Length: 87
View 1 (cartoon, helix red, strand yellow):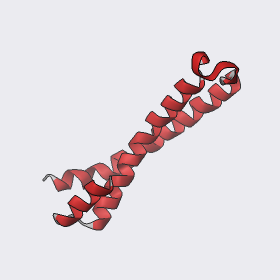
View 2 (view 1 turned 45 degrees about the vertical axis):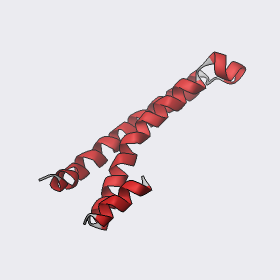
View 3 (view 1 turned 120 degrees about the vertical axis):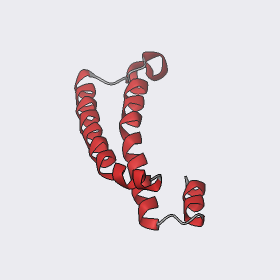
View 4 (view 1 turned 90 degrees about the horizontal axis):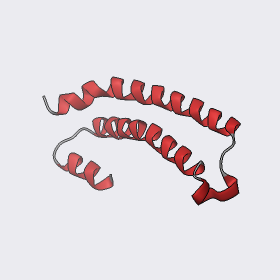
């Protein structure tokens, strides 16, 4: 990610645009990572007796929905900025 930011800075990208885009990418990656953690923490072969219980799975589902909404909001508000790079 650092190298990509440096390349954009070298070729004339505004620092605020680069930072905003990095935040948008991070926001989109967050729900994906929540789902991966949920899948791993429920794998009996991998976790053995330490898998999630029903209550923790419900809580993780709520966290997923919240992060999905936050990801949508972040992406929707930064999309015009990212699109302006290619206009």
